[in-house]
Amino acid sequence: MILMRGYSDKGRRWHQEIDLDLAVTLVREQAAVVVNRRTIRRLYSNKDFRRYILTRDRYTCHFCGLYGDTIDHLLPRAKGGHTTPMNCVCACNLCNQAKADQYVDEFMGN
Ligand SMILES: [Zn+2]
Image (cartoon, rainbow, N blue to C red):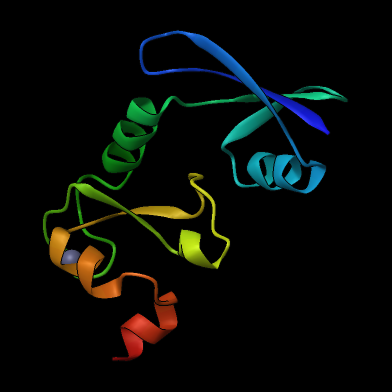
C-alpha cells in the first residue's frame, strides 16, 4: 500500500492508504507527485482541481466549443476513470449530461 497525502478545500491535511496501481495512475495522470517510495502527494483539493481544469480549458466545452463550467471525465468514473488532469475536461451542462457514462468515441459517434 501507498500513503497518499493531500489538503482539503479548507486546508486540512488528510491522508489515506491506496493501492500501488492507483498511486501509479494518479502520478502518471498528473494528479499527484511522488514524495518517496511509499508516499505520494495529491496536488489539488477538490475546489482547486475544478478551478484548475476550467481555467486550463478556458471555460470552453471540450465537445461543442460553447461555454462550459462543469467537469467531465473522458473515461467515466463508472468505467474506472479517475479524477485527474489528464482524464478531466471542461464541458457544458448539456454535453456533460448527454455523455453521462459513455466513452468519448461512443458519444462523439452519436
Ligand atoms: Zn458542450
